[in-house]
Image (cartoon, rainbow, N blue to C red; front, side):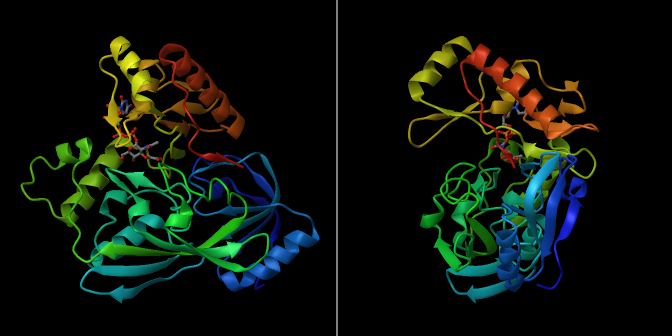
Length: 338
Ligand code: EPU
């Protein structure tokens, strides 16, 4: 191992909510060949392991027991460039948005709808990042990493990742058991720009035949307008998932709330805009103990300064209760509490 883990590491600057957190131990993994030694270090001291990418989808406690591995390995390579597809390999530690720009600049199109999402390449498959009509799962060919129980390398193909809306096996059966070191993506050689998402279509209304560059700049404009920049106002993106409910439940809700924002799913169920539900309950722009609801996007909780994970979870619990009381719908947390 090239460097020893740091004891009593301050993780305030390593999470996009800027929650105060001291970890027992923390190491930056620049080279995955250091992992076996780091795993032994943890095993010898009976330390639980925690893996951090950009820290943009986690809720860190004030004291984190165990060894934190911050993935910092880099590298992007084009492995295949055929008439039908391009295969791209990217290291887990690559920051996501620069990866999108890197691909776009080389004509490896497809990722434009996912521009400006905070975090890293390695974290992206865990919650199957998605935005403006595209979810990551459509491009994932393989996720490569290490089985944390055996210390052996392991490769999962897309089917084995069990992707669904903001979910995957890495949050389910393999939670805490698999460390992602790199991801292989396959994008079509000549993808059709994806412009169907209502907010994106509206942004592109002036553009008669939008190309990939138009989609990229439209997505970046919408996000800059609607979502707070974590570097300016600390946040972890959407704090709740958009709930998906049964058709009968939706018909009942629609009678009471004819304007409820929703998307019908191919399986007959209906996805609701959690932001709409939260806003209707009067939470938009409210703040308490440093934790607040963003003024332009009711699904985003922010740290106005001095908030802890506890303060955010308290606020989230009150929001969940009021949404449940008014609409009978249960909101699920999106960031992962460690
Ligand atoms: N809306 C409101 N009030 C608000 C914001 C939105 O009523 O304050 C309603 C509007 O009717 C709007 C609808 O909600 O049409 C959807 O809003 P938006 O397009 O902003 O998307 P979202 O459902 O709130 C989801 C993702 C975002 C992603 C956007 C765009 C989840 C949990 N969130 O948000 O992802 O960027 O769609 O695709 O699925 C994230 O996961 O961290 C994230 C930011």
